Length: 596
Image 1 (cartoon, one colour):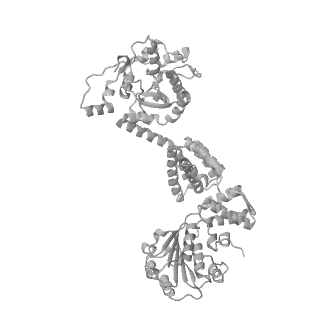
Image 2 (spheres, rainbow, N blue to C red):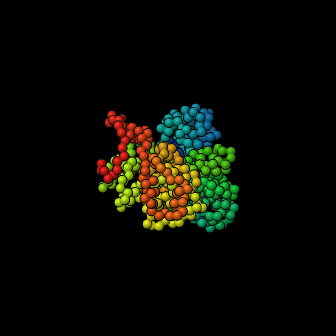
Image 3 (cartoon, helix red, strand yellow):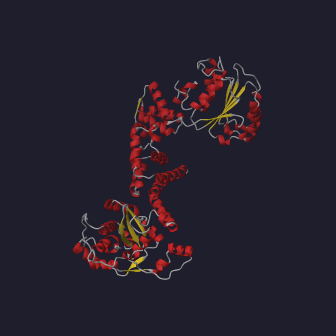
């Protein structure tokens, strides 16, 4: 007569139990040392061997030469226990015998001696289903049972069992069985059944079972019934709707780069092909989990994944930061819970992918605002919009940065003044934004100044991002540092942080390509008194391209006046006045040549 694999290959002795070595060793030692307790509680996930080990323990106690941990499975008493016909090993379903009357009958029957064995053993499965009255009726005999009675309880929800019952039992928690052990067990079954199965296919089945060996055995049995004696990866994916890591990694890359449309297209194609959105969510969550473990420590996954899977994880992790992976994992876990009870799972999963693809921009905006908030309290700790760092030959950071934006060199005829004007004068970005038809762009020569290169970057970026032009009018080149390209902005800080956030990642990449530096901003408290019109700028660029600026153009960019209202309302200056109990008497422009 045919038996399913979960019954046919059910462990019959301690040595055949898979993945529960901590429980097996404790029970075998207890039998050898004659320290067998009167009540045991086996708890853990489904399909991990709780009831199986309860039967093995019962056989080891009631076998002919027992108690014996190394009993003969073909002993007549052991065979009776396996078949469920033993008078001295009674298995009770707690779900259907959960009333107080059934427990009272059990309590009365337990007083009688065993028929042919040493002990009368009660195995109560799903014991958490008993009512409170039934538990109360069980307490007395559970605490002081007759010498010939042993209780073994099994449950998947131990938190539902009263503590008064738990405290009277020795408790063992059954853990989920590792993926490798499940795959090895399935490989043995295939060899016994003469089934040609790919190792990769068996590992996918082990992943699906989520640590439950019984689920894996049932899935393998189903595959053999459908495909016969040959099981490969394609068979498993077709049978159970498994997607595989390649398309999921592609979706994750799109999410990491903020390409929500591409990610949505790929997800829609998978759903149209008949993939289960709940299963897709679980696979995607597992992928994010593996990426998070890889980012934290690569050694964590070496024993769990094969080299090909590790290479997939390595490639996709290059596009993600660990904080972003953690945020994605938390969001995906929340969406997976929602999918369980959703009526339109496909729509909800697509919404989940759209939200995940926007998560990177949300995180970037929050970081910008948080960094700016910290900068108002401590200017030197600024990260997103830092002030220029002080150099050994420069003035202190507070003094140097303030004078750099409020004073310009007087002597514009000397070579040093011209060099300083090229590198530290504030060049309005609006002057460099020209009409694409009037001024076709060409690659910048390597000899151009940093200010002109910045103007080229902004012009090129504005051409591909028209919405950036309004922000570009408020940006001014300051200087090129050792590791940073420093740019002034003349907007209200919080408003600037909100408006620059969508463009900052892409703009920073462009700056990285041209300058090999990080792009940073800090506020500007001066405003230009003269501005070059767009037509003049267009004409100038049309005739001269990106050549060095003339003295007349430098005079225009050098002629700035102090915005006194902005300075007086600056939060840093207000805070300094409150600390030192001071007040502003006058505001002067000071040139760097005059010294501190």
